[in-house]
Image (cartoon, rainbow, N blue to C red):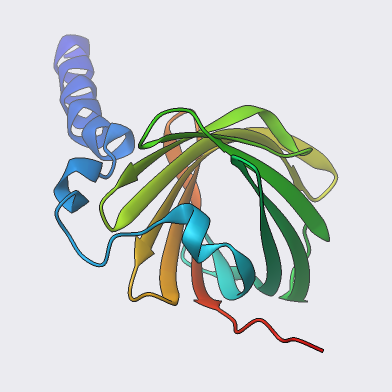
Length: 184
C-alpha cells in the first residue's frame, strides 16, 4: 500500500514539475515586429506603470517608475525612480547595461546579485538576474525572469516572473511608454 502511495505522489510531482520549470521560448519572437531595440527604446525619458501579484493573484504592489536612459559610449545607463501607491520597494535603481555580442547583453545594478544576462529576440527581450528581495522583515534570494515585448515604437509591455527554487512566487506586469524629450 505504501508503494502505491509513493508511486501516486511521484506521478503527481511529474505532472507539477514541468509547469515550474517551463519558460518562454524566445525563438518564437525572432521574426515578430516591431523589433525591440533596447538602446533606442530607453534613450531618453520613459514612464512606466506596474503591479506585482503574489501567487494567489492578489495585487500587493502598485507603482509608477520614471526612467531616464542615457547612452554613454557602448553602455546604456538607466536611472529608475519608483513611486508606490500600494506596498513598498526600492526608491531608485541605476542599471548599467553593456552589449556583449550582437543580441547578448549584461546588466549591473547595486541591488542585483552578480550580473544580469540579457538576450534579444526580435520584438522580445529577456533579462535574467538574481536579487535579495526584501519582504517584511527578511530578504529572500530570488531569480527574475524578465520579458519585454514591443507593442509599437514608443510602447512596451514587461512581464517578470519572480522565482524561488524554480517556482513562480510572484508576477510583475509593467506597461512602459517612451516620453518626448522636453527642451527648456
